[in-house]
Image (tube, rainbow, N blue to C red; front, side):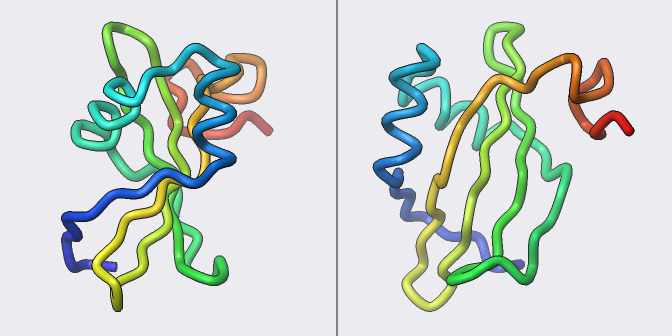
Length: 96
């Protein structure tokens, strides 16, 4: 997953959740571009994925992004605003 890909696709699930959560396409792309990887899921199938934290206009967003290296794709699986009762104040670590 070290190769940077240039194609981004949104799964239907991500689009539905973004609509429900009032997260725009542009907000998701901005969070992806400026975000940081906070968790890795190398054994996810069919592609390894990562949890990315990005902040857009002061709003924290988590994106689950899978990488299909063979087809040069980053796949947005879901996007959500992290629940402060489940995450630390910086939204980087899950609360015990």
